Length: 351
Image (cartoon, rainbow, N blue to C red; front, side, top):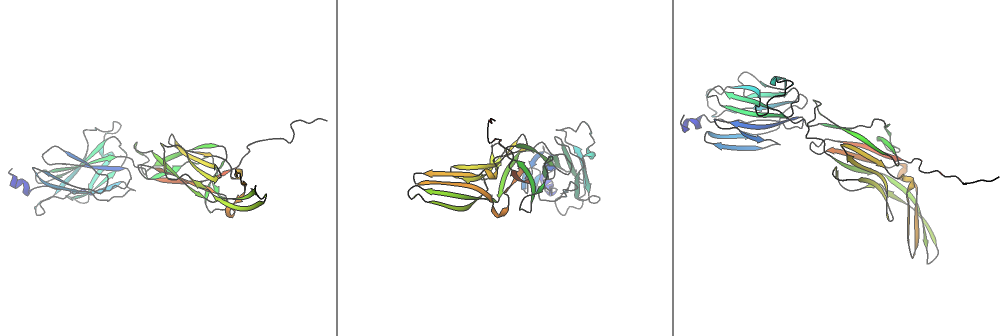
């Protein structure tokens, strides 16, 4: 076949695929009488390929239904005035990755259905997960037998993240119109993080987390100050807002904490971190343990806890985000003082 004729029957394919984070990642491969050329498709991209056989243009755009795991693929045959542009669709396993040994029937995993006979628009549907294997959706022209191939992969993107609070009673937090759990000061708990998707088969590439905190409310305090020069004592009342260490903390880092600032340091209320894929929470000191003492040669000041701002017990919203998918979940936490010591008014008595 001479090059003039080759140019006249040059083939192009436009592939419309959705990347909605639902579990199917699509790569593209085109073959026109030459070795296959592959492209990854992380988002909305455009490619142009040139070879001896003609000029081929590839375009990717969003389309699909995450609930039914379907994607739409469209083939465009050039030239536009060709009298017969009919195509046939098929689906096979990629020989480079073989097929799952437990069930080698490709149509049990992926199907391709044209919208009508000879249609250049087809629907790809994922029926079950097949991570680690590739499926090829093939489109072939009736005239000339030209073929274009779409590589379909299952990556198992999660679309939900839950924090397991079994064993803890969820309650409306004091003074707030939000629900959460209460942790006793001085205790540490680990909460399971569960990723899921519509097929209940999350891929191995997910499970890396970041955490962040948002603090709500604060405490009131009473202060007594003494002036060494005049001998005068003054009293006042004030507030301290609950605060947190700034920014998102990846799991490679350690503690992320909520605290009450005071002279010379802070009172640690809650510490959060990711340990072995779980959210680990440590309830520190109780709010009522807040006290502060500052002194210099001019005098001293003592601050002591008196209550909560507007009567609302402070709480912390801890958010966990799966890094690669972006799915996240938050949990509201407050702390409760518990027994920390015991003493008697006398250590010995005689009669």
